Amino acid sequence: QAKAAGRGSLRFFSPEIMLRARERLSLEAEMRRALERGEFRVHYQPQLHLNERAVTGLEALVRWAHPERGLLGPGAFISMAEESGLIVPLGNWVLREVGRQMRAWTDEGAAPGYVAVNLCALQLGYGDLADSVRDVLETNRLAPGCLELEITESCLMADRGRAIDTLETLRGMGVRLSIDDFGTGYSSMSYLQHLRVHRLKIDMTFVRDLETNPGNASIVTAIIALGHSLDLEIVAEGVETPEQLAHLRRLGCDLVQGYLVGRPVPASRVLDLRFGPGHPLVGMLPA
Ligand code: C2E
Ligand code: MG
Ligand code: MG
Ligand code: MG
Image (cartoon, rainbow, N blue to C red; front, side, top):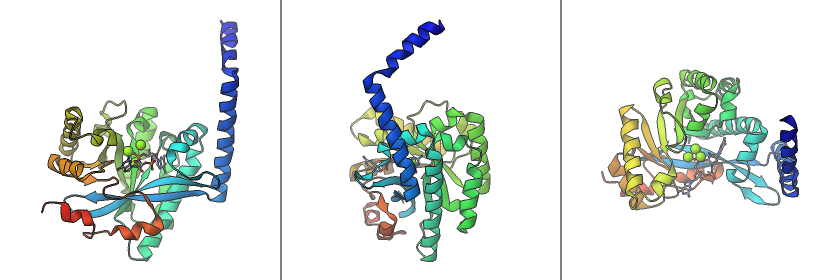
């Protein structure tokens, strides 16, 4: 049997696979170097709170300012970073950078209410995430409530016990938690009873054709009802049109995020976003 498995595995050494393995290795090496050289950037996307009629916070989204390939989005490198484990140092860098930036905005008297940072399963499996977060908050003298952590349903499935313990610790510190891409993962939803999160983020695949696809409209309605019955706020992602905004508002969604409100921008352009009631979209919201 071992022999059969051995012979079978020879199939894996096809030229194509070898090439891909080599590309992977060089991307990994390049990412390591990029971390040392400071080639990663954080962009920030606004979230509009519909009842408060104001941009209340931002989501941090990592970018790679690649010297030859230009500015790369997470699609080009996050899955590799997760597979290689590089996501742990990269994720820590994002946390530290967001903390540093929040302190700078606070000193300028222009801090957003909170910044949401994306986490992946591997970061949660690591024992020291709560320590890293505490350290970032203390170093920058930040209130825990100005940090939100976005986790996906798959994070909670991967290493259940450990992930939930870590998140409980963070929640106990006063950090806010949200479930990202809600409704797209395999999950039992029972974790919502054990882990008290603050928000559910409706995945943009449900928002995209909300007005024309009755199935998606039903799913969005159900997520909002579920979330509200658990006392959670609902954020809709990927909102691009005024029609989607109006529809989501009618369904009782609490916050919207998407190109309609604002694209992700570098920190230097965040002050243009106008926090508080100054956002131009607020004029479109019925009183
Ligand atoms: P996500 O957390 O669900 O972030 C939302 C994604 O939707 C972002 O893509 C954002 O740029 C994009 N988006 C926002 N509004 C719109 C819209 O109106 N239309 C469309 N078509 N897209 C919109 P991005 O920046 O490419 O990030 C992709 C994913 O990469 C994120 O999905 C998140 O899962 C992951 N990611 C980003 N930054 C980090 C990070 O620092 N750490 C980890 N672990 N993952 C990250
Ligand atoms: Mg997110
Ligand atoms: Mg999402
Ligand atoms: Mg996502």
